[in-house]
Length: 122
Image (tube, rainbow, N blue to C red; front, side):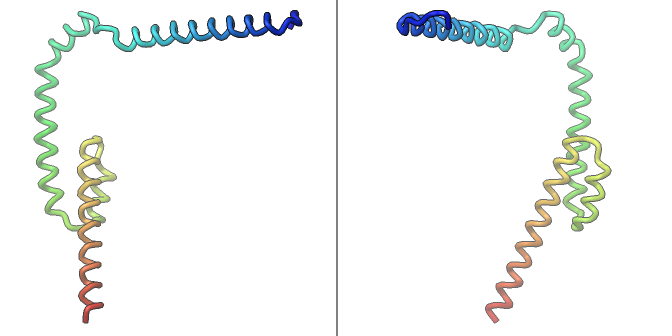
């Protein structure tokens, strides 16, 4: 603002843009280095110590989900599935129940369209 020379103003603006560009590059490099920072060795040790227990829990959860899946196949009422969905606590359980609800609704829609097609053809 203090200078009236247009050429000098252009040089100042280009210098400011260059400084801003360099600052952005430094920020991006900092973020990239934080993003890809290697894990700490103590954290890896904790994982090794907890792995057998977590594997056992995962196996139990998979078995429970398989049993739930079989149970859901036997249910033919959306209302019953909705009750189960409201009572479910785990994300994976809710995910399976929602899939079963979608499947039942799709079957209901398919049955309705087939019935409609049969009636319209008569």
